[in-house]
Image (tube, rainbow over all chains, first blue to last red; front, side, top):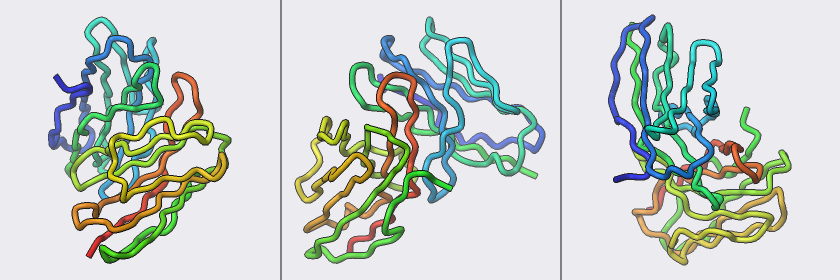
Length: 110
Length: 113
């Protein structure tokens, strides 16, 4: 089993749609979780940290389910500009390492 | 604008050349990272420095040599690279401690001829 797994997609959705991505992780001791967004040929940019209680930032909502070892990202009212690859990142406990998922590609269509 | 600055943005070099990639951050972060990223793949960790000491080397070939001169700077020295080393090289930094995200520079796109 991979340490961090994501569905690679692509997810093709119309503008205005709601889309959700999941990411599973294998190390139950992991403490820190993040979603990054990466545009083609650009660097990853932090979208949001994921907290135990869940958190929301505008159209984006992140959730953590420790019992099932997954995190999720919900995007409401999708915009064309949301088209990107979304990377799930999980910290490796006791080290300075961050484990990346393979990324999920999102295409928002006009 | 990224708070982690990488230079150069693009680099083309021959297999016998020696070059260096540079990374700078002024956020007071004490952990700094080098990643290699190939197209359509996630970033792949190469090295981690914490408090200016090398703490992780992910079995990277010796033709890549990292250096951390001070808490704000991170270099990656390149020598005798191979064509398969062509990739986007990303630098990142973070606070130490839990729940601290990484911040990435915009990368150096490296092509080996």
